[in-house]
Amino acid sequence: MREVTTAEPFVAADADTKDWTWVLERACAACGVDAGSVPLTAVPRLLDEAAAAWTAVLGSGGSGGNGSDGDERLRRRPRPGVWSTTEYAAHVRDVHRVFDERLALVLGTTGEDVATFANWDQDAAAAVGRYDLDEPRQVAHDLAAASARVADRYAAVRPEDAGRRGIRSNGSAFTVTTLAQYHLHDVLHHLHDVGAPVPATALPTTDGSTA
Image 1 (cartoon, rainbow, N blue to C red):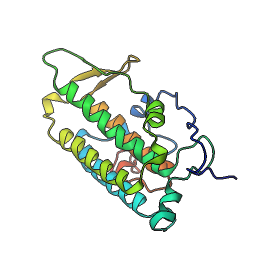
Image 2 (cartoon, helix red, strand yellow):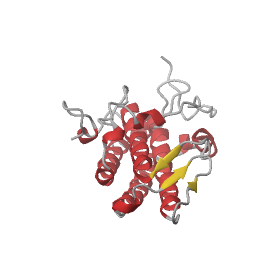
Image 3 (cartoon, rainbow, N blue to C red):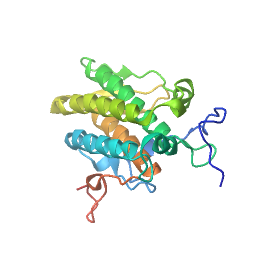
Image 4 (cartoon, rainbow, N blue to C red):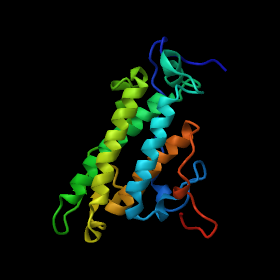
């Protein structure tokens, strides 16, 4: 199968138009993550583990390579229409930033108010931001920083605020807890997409709970 390299004219990856909110109700058959059973208090630790995994992936140069050759492997698409490892990581970096903003909005509401999230087109963000040209190690640094910020914000959520609500532009409703779970699945699912192991503590155990 022909590989697509960054030397070729940029072509946007295939758009993802699926509604992924079902991952709050059952384990994902693809990556195995059962996000809906992960308690809010476990999310910061799992985000930290995921950030470390992404750092390892982006520092590996792909298949153990180093330097510019390794970077090129990380920036090469496995096939047309599918993001490269670096593009997936740049997406995850921006996912952390978007969810940090959304969490801040939810926590900033008072009483029975409900936060409203502005639309974020992830495919447009990838194209406008030219994720395909990003340098892997810079993405790793920025991803880790963004992950740490939002993990700290989740860790500071008071139990009485876990039920505060927000609504996405398409009408999907979230609490702080389900927002964190949905966020976590996205980050871990993309580790699976690039062939990296998903933290075992996010996977269901034999009794149906998470470790």
